[in-house]
Image 1 (spheres, helix red, strand yellow):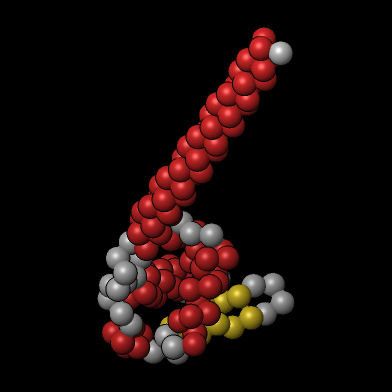
Image 2 (cartoon, helix red, strand yellow):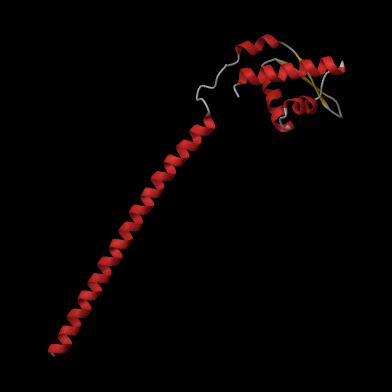
Length: 136
């Protein structure tokens, strides 16, 4: 998800929960509403706090969220430049795996050829020795 959409979702969840409960929502409530883990939600909240989009107030029992300057969301990038990075990383990994498989096959073919050559050499030497023994 791009940062722009993610920021809008979090701000909308904060507004909705604030309206419903008539008090600032906790991080856990926002994460539950958006169906994301608390760790991921905290990471997003910290990013948004750095850009002065949300406020985070901590007390001994919870972390409450508020909206600071929602207009800063418009400055966030709307799309990720690399597209779906996970699928691109997967494609890159698969291409590297194919290259590695080809290298392994080439090494195995080289070893097989060496074994055959060694076997042929040993066989030739054995025949030579047998011929010497028959003549001698």
